[in-house]
Amino acid sequence: MLGHIVFLLLALRASAVFCPDCDDTDVVRLANAADPCAGVVLVTIDNIEGTICDSSWDMNDAAVVCRQLGCGAPISAPGGSVFGIVRNTSPRISNVGCRGDESSVLKCSYSYRPPVSCVKKRDASVQCTGPDQVRVVNGPSFCAGRVEVRHNGAWGTVCDDSWDQKDASVFCRQLGCGAVQSYQYNSSFGISPLPVLMSDVQCQGDESALWKCAQRGWDVNTCPTGRNAGVTCAGEADTVRLVNSGDACRGRVEIKHENRWGTVCDSDWDMKDAEVVCRQLNCGSASRAETRNDIFLNGVFPVWMSDVKCTGAEESLFDCPRASCGINSCPWRSDGGVQCSESRVFDPTVFRAPLSVDPKTADGTLLISSDGRELRNLGLGRCVPGSTGVSSGRWYWVVSMDQAVRVPYWVMVQTHWRLGVASASVSTRDNLLYALQEGFWVLTQEWSEYNVIDETDREHRFSGLLSNVGIFVDYEEGLVSFYDANTNEHLYTFTATFKEKIYPFICLGYGRHAYLQ
Image (cartoon, rainbow, N blue to C red; front, side, top):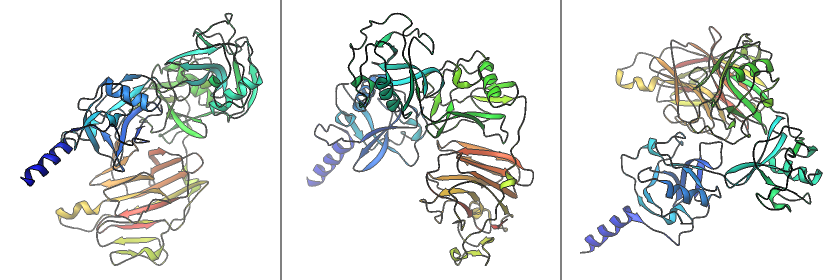
């Protein structure tokens, strides 16, 4: 009898549950999207974070998540991991059944122990309208332009009646662009076709958001036509670059904003937009505008810019009409790229530096020479960091790999190697031949192929034979590039935001021999 009771209790725990009294503070968040109100849904249960299986996932469930996160109403409730795979997670619950009025998704019914069919590619996601937000448009940078606000999921303008230094100061601070330099009126940055959402704004100057200032009320329009407010903030100037080709005039378009690099969505991306980028970078005229970036591949940073609509005559990409910075209408992560008529191939060898590892890291299977520049592994996979880390500047290291000693087929998997850089807080002495974690930027040799895995778990493979590998790091620009050191051919570039010292590292499989040049 007791066995039947225990079995029944376990069955109930594995089936749908309802927890109206659960403490659900900070147990739900979104990942893998620049928009804070879109992405893969992550829940924390029993101090373990994981995803939600998309079985039974619908708009009622998404409505609860959007409201719980303060993100307004749901736009869509996609399944199938459309925002990509979240590393080191697995589904925690499935069969979520919300009515739509719950305060937390964990107060809806759901099932523990998602079925085997709920693999990583079946994670539930949401897109929400987002909270009230601010942006500037039609200006020379992300910190100057016509003032616009979003309320109830719709964008509109601010009337310039009563618009002054105090109002502009609050707006600049809310935008994350520092102090105000100047404020504009009479539609200095163009007349908007959008409705006026705020009129007669009167801030004291210390408010945290524009809508905390006195005003006539949302949608109360007392503004004459052509009276849109504008602002110029003291924020850092935004810059543009092309990456992942080894040529400064070809690559994926990236923009630096708030000291962080991000990409440009390929929605509406065309030759007119590419022409402006090439002109801005002094790279001649545009040869191609890349979309669905199969050539330069997609990035893993926020999508800073989307719906770009240049005429082709602008001097800068920031002069073109576009959606606001960080307003991501590009959930499928398809980034824009450019090929220009001129070429400026980068030579990393100018920054070549010696590389060695600490001989004290040697053990019974990993043999290291006294100068730390020759390594041989006689056992299972081992990883060791370089003896010196870097926290600034540009660096280029070369590692030579010989072929593994002849071993039986069944141990060939142990002969692979990995090279790259890692953050100081991540241990590089673990066996990383098979598992990676955040904080690593790595090139891997597996059988006769070479592979990099970006931060969304996508693989990018290269064929051929690499005997000498170059590793280039630009700390300030957040670049990690790999080269065939024999031909100086560019293989792949990671873009990152380094926050601590980073170290080169080498992982050797069974019988591998490496020489650090």
